[in-house]
Image (tube, protein in one colour):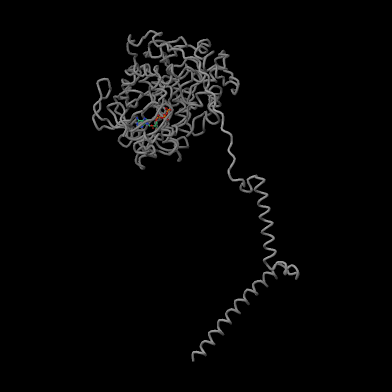
Length: 581
Ligand SMILES: Nc1ncnc2c1ncn2[C@@H]1O[C@H](COP(=O)(O)OP(=O)(O)OP(=O)(O)O)[C@@H](O)[C@H]1O
């Protein structure tokens, strides 16, 4: 077991992502007062050990520490709680509650898509988590099924959003010198793809993609290269699959609006989804059906979406500043502003990957946009660097105490399929079966959420009144301005060693080697000559026999030979016997 900090012991890796490795770990001793959860010795936790390149970046370490309070105070029944942050030596790690259960990506892959009702209810809980974090000024920015863990609670699968704060770290100056977008191509909002100012509406877009994927099994814009996916986010409208009920499609469509201002707030999304879930079930009452059909009216946008802090180079807000939701209005789309977050010179510009880039696609809704190709430069680079899902990487055996592949406890088999209901049978919309989770009972009795009702109440809109603007977060901007790194020329590629020729001069024939073919020809000639000389082939040809006659002759000769041997043996035996008498 490997110690991490002085308080924790890493036991086994659970998985690896773009920003680090998550380990199952054990608490050695109670954490200090700075931890949100001190924990007990022997308690099991999950620890995300961030990649070395993050840990070695002074900017990121600083941000990590400054954001400590934000990460640690973010608590909600649908958010994986961050218990502690470890910054020791070259180690940067987040200590989290351990969630026993698969992530949503794996769950869909193994069990197939969910029913519309189940998908709506699950996404409503994710929207609850987003509402809470947005109210606290925290935008997730990397919402995707892999970041939703499914905990088992009372026989129900309970979605929990994880990786909060990681996008914020990854967005710190140390990593955004090239202004990569933070996110995963299949889930990235158009404004993030273009490098325009972002708000909490990017999470609503991510929730829309996730919802689409839950009911269909795949995200709406996928396939091809990361760049193609980004193009599709910007220019294509999602198509409604026949299995998606109309009211649910209304919600998906609004979430996937290219215009962030048209997307609903997280609170309204949660409310709308619950109305839809109630109205599309097999036992829905006429009033519920009617409410579901009018869901569009519930999906009002957030009047004051939480802004995503800009990088210091952009001349925007302090990146470490945590803004309460009411602290400002959504940044307007401003071509100049959008351009300003993109490098016009410097490292990213120097390493000019535009040579392989297609032209920037037109942006019909917004009209004007930056003429600089930099968004695509950075996106291509980001797409290369980021994998959509957990990356399988070599793990130094010395870091892997158990020398085992990542293992996660799967929920018992009988609880997995159908917790949220898989597709396959016919339901009200001709696609889903009634299911134990919510469709078999009258709507009034259905549990809308597995966690107690007070949590639901806690996240109704009025509960999200922005906290008073905390002065301590309004840091002077220049304080966080990172030192501009000297432009780094890309490391020259090492020249390839000259190709080694095989020590064996004769290659296997058939592989295009002339020498091998010649050797084989010689072998065939020699073998033919031996057959000619050592077999009665010449005689047979001279006698003009057919192939079958020659074979027949050969066989009868052999039989004669054996019978002669037999007779000789018998006569010898008979002679011996006579002599003996
Ligand atoms: N708190 C946790 N408890 C249990 N397992 C976890 C926890 N957090 C993450 N995991 C698991 O660890 C694995 C890696 O998580 P990670 O967040 O690093 O991956 P990712 O989301 O694919 O990557 P990234 O978002 O960094 O690109 C995932 O399989 C996830 O299910």
